[in-house]
Structure formats: C-alpha cells, structure tokens
Image 1: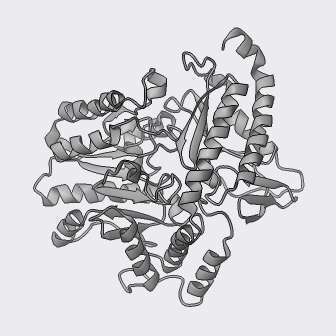
Image 2: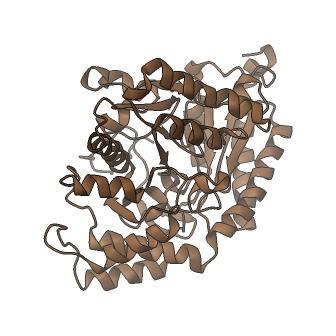
Image 3: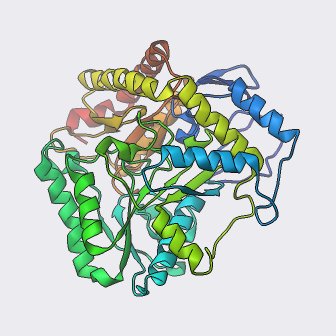
Length: 454
C-alpha cells in the first residue's frame, strides 16, 4: 500500500518498503485500522494470537503484575510468575521434562536448544558431536545458529559465508512425490533418509535432529506420513542423536494438542515453543529438556547461555494467563472441531478452483497450495508471485492470510489459514466467503495461463 500524502515518513524498516494501514484496535478475531476498516485475522498474525486479541482475563493478569514489577533480573531474583509458568509448562510437557528455560521468541528458543544439546554432548565425553541434521525445506529461526538448520534458500544463502550450514534431508512431502501419506511404507521411506544421513556424516559426529512435528511456514502445515514420527524417534535413539521438536508454531494447542508431537505419542529429548505460548500478549518462548540433559549440564558448571529478558515477570504473567485461558475455555477442543470444519471447507474450494492442488494440516494449523497442474503438482512460474498476489487480494477484502514459497523459497505458492482458536462456525463462513472471492479474482487474472497450462 502506498502511503497517502498526509502520512508521515516512517523511520522503521523491516523486510520491504511496503506500507500498511495503521492499526487502531484488535478484539477477538478482528482488527481495525484507524480508518475503521475491519480485518479478520485469518492467520493469527504469524500463527501467534492463538486465543484471540485483547482477552480481558489476560490483560487483567498483566495489569496486576505491572503494579508489582515489570522486570526482575534472573541473577538477582526468582519471580512468582516465572516459577508458576515453569511449573505449568512442565505439567504440559512430555514426561521427564521438568525444567523450562524462558526466552523472548522462537529463534532464541531454537538457538538455546542447539547450544544445550552441544553442551550436553560435551559433558558426556562426546565432543565430536556437533552436526544438527534438519530438513529441506524448513524454517527454524533468523539468528545465525537457527539459520544454519533452516532450509529456505532465500533466507540462508546471503549468510552462508558467516555460518556453518548443517546437513539436510528432504522433508516428507508425500503429496509432491506421488506417495500415499497414509501408508506406513511412506513414513519409513522418508525416515530412512535420516538414518542414511547419520551414517553418511558419521554417527559419532551427529548431535541432533530438529523437526517440526507439523510443518510451519516453509512447508505449509505439512503433516508427516504414517509412522514417520515414531521411526525418526527410534533412529535417533539408536544412534545417540538428540531429537529436538520445534513446536514454535505447532505448540500452544493450535493442532488440538498442546504440543503437536502428542498426536503420535512421541517424546523428544528437547522441545521449543513460542508464538502461541503467550499468544502475542508479550514476547515469550520456552525451551524444555529432559531432566538428564539439564542436570548433566548444570552439574558440569552450568548452561553457558542466557538472555536479558529470560523469565521476565510481565511476560511470564501473560504466558501463564494465556495457558489458563486455553484450558478454561476448552480451546484445544475447539481447535480440533473448528479446524475440521475449516479444513473441509478449504477442501471444498478444490472443487471450484482446479488450481488449488492440496489442502493439509491439523487442527487450526492449515494450509492450501496452488498448482498449475494438479496431476503433476507443477507450480506456477515463480515470476507470477502468486504467493504474494493472493495475500494482497485477500487483504484488500479484509481477510489476512499468510504465505510462503513451497519449493524451498524460490517457487511454489502455499497459504496458511490459521485463525485464532476462539474461531466459530460463523468465522469459518466469513473466511471461506472472502477467500472464495479472492480466489475468483485471482482466477480471472491467471485464466489465460490455466487455459494453456502454465
């Protein structure tokens, strides 16, 4: 959006020069700009605002904490909000994860997990272990350490000279490879790639494998094929490789379970969560680890890592209130029910629009992908920029969705549709109505390409 003449110059900069309307207020699943236009938050921001905007119980908990203290440095004080949140996180985490390390966001959480894994290996006399295997495509954060395990070329290529890129295996995108995701043989096929990579790198050098149980932005809500999660757990255990679950986006109840790994009854050695953990009310994330890992590191002199705002009492008060709201309002059950309805309605769009090639996801972590040929899953030419174009069309109609390039960052177009967990059937109707209009407008624009086969 081009700034109007009366708008002052912005002194902020982020990724691009694109300007957006000025936000006035947000309530529930809606946001309003200063001109009064309403937007339905169909992506929960960046899959963050799990409980919706301006929840009064969370705001009241933050007010109470602000009246007491807004900061207490962790080397000087323990704080009640941080202790209570850590206890709650331990209650929600897999068995044996009794310790939490708080951070301000997902990149910090991943960085923390990688460093804790490395320190643990050193305490065990396994100093040769330093390689963290990840998948391509994948996204694990923007710091150099997190980028090293990220598989999204436009984000990593400019910085490769400054970091140590880590080994990658293909993400289990069965729908692109023509394989049946419900066949356990498919899960075994992709899991075998991990074992081959461990053997290729040398098992004694492999520290960890990091995986999103349900894919985030880079793979568009990719659900692993049958048997995959159990198989990679067994492979990691066999070779002494730590399994890290990146639940930054999939955690916080969005998939219908608090942690997405619960869908497969698979426990990692370390997990990270952010985004929905405090649902946008304050910058907050957490790393959780098996007790044996934390104890070994603390007994060996301590974790050589930390952040100024780790365990900030105001952020932790917000996070605790968010978790209480998720439970009090039954939002995980709602994510399951409304997610199933929304997914079915998105699949219905495939009947109307032949260029919608795939719909996938779990709970309210959902996505659909555009293709020029559904039979071959051929993407549209990258030069069309459809991943951006459809977002802009929807935005103009008052619907916010989130997009990325499917094929490692340079081609393909997928869109995440992930409204807050408070969404109702009426909200689903609104989303589908605006999305249908948006896809119809896009279809009119790309019609000639569809006629001749892009």
